[in-house]
Image 1: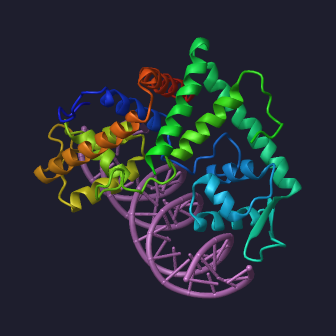
Image 2: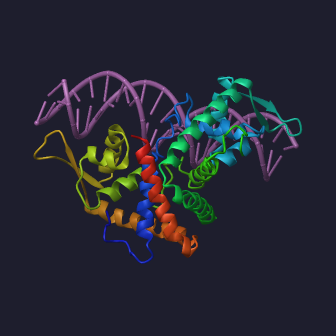
Image 3: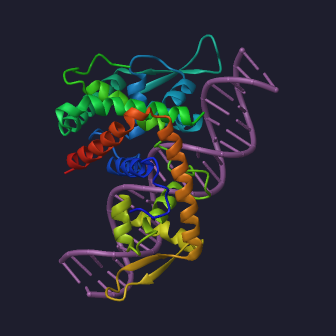
Length: 151
Length: 151
DNA sequence: GAAGATTGAGGCTTCAATCTTC
DNA sequence: GAAGATTGAAGCCTCAATCTTC
């Protein structure tokens, strides 16, 4: 699908194609699809997973999820409405709200985690054994490179 | 960030972490951000790039972009409104609309392509030389595996 | 009836402005 | 004033229903 415009010097074109294909193959434009057959939106699932161990503040959650404060605010309101977490005022800093999963929330999180793991297991199974380590390494390298480019 | 819930048998956990980190690092939740400093939304850019060589139908464009027909319909309306493409009735099949870039659309597409290439060049530059081939391979393997899993 | 395309309703996210608390 | 959080406006996407053309 080359335009004949790109300078093909460094193999960048191949990289682009591979990356775009990946994004589309994973359907990374459709954030609403439930990630693994569970009754939650993708961002809800990520939030729950992130809150499983620790009672983060909204700000901290936003940073980890790389979402806007406003998005997280609404997201958390939903989760609270479903009784999956509780919002507590931080004792030391009245501005912050600390997020703590309820028992129901933790149960759901475990189910999501299991489903996600199952999905990734299928995915891993579809990758030739000898290439798996290389793929994981590549993902890490890429994530790091992207991070570096944004600063 | 392990929950202590996951069975760590096959290295799936590492894979999950690496993948999630990648998605977040690239900000793949925010489809509206202009991809490379150009005045177009991400999906608009992808559509233009896809239409650079061929006059696809909307259905075919939707398939390539892995978007819904309805999304593409609205997307194309916008691009038409900006005079970047024209919608023509297909001569052989009156149901289909064939999409053809205007001169302005092609100019813009070239600019987007250049900007995107520049961005990927920076990204590639941030990857150690000896790992680049492995990374591209890994992306391809992953995309293929994801594709296979959805069927 | 089948297939291409369009329209209406609803969800998720961003940006900007605002409120609260330090 | 700075930082955590919230609210309002707008954009992109999906799903479902509908219109048009084969």
